[in-house]
Amino acid sequence: MSTSSRISIIASLGVVALLVGCASVPTRQLNEARTDVRVAEAVGAANHPHSAYHLRLAKDQIATAEKWIDDGKRREKKRAKLVLRRAESDAELATAQARAARLREREKQEWAEVQRLQHMTMPVLEPFEGDGEPGPDKSTTEHRGH
Image (cartoon, rainbow, N blue to C red):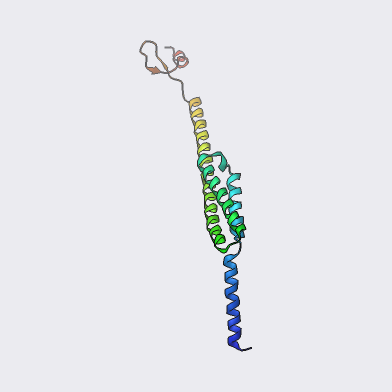
């Protein structure tokens, strides 16, 4: 076999491998999208309106991609890859939004605790008799002999 024949065969095999690779089932993208959805669910994305919306989109996109993959047509598999990228993005966005919502909730709780502690440590000001303006409470005025 001549060198040019070998090169032709190798080039042909390379082209065939490339075409098979392009038309192959996007298993990696499908697994990544499913994993991203599981992460979003684990952080509570379903419990917050904005993140729940994107989680639902991701799940729907995965279902659509699975149908296209099962169809077996090369064009549909390419479309499935694109839809799976969108599913990954939506699932990641749902995760980020759920985490942000949890942080906002935690911030509110911490702020309420700060307010509670401040209220406990500040002196209570009650109005003086007669003028209606706030002043020291009666226990401090009685100590001074007023």
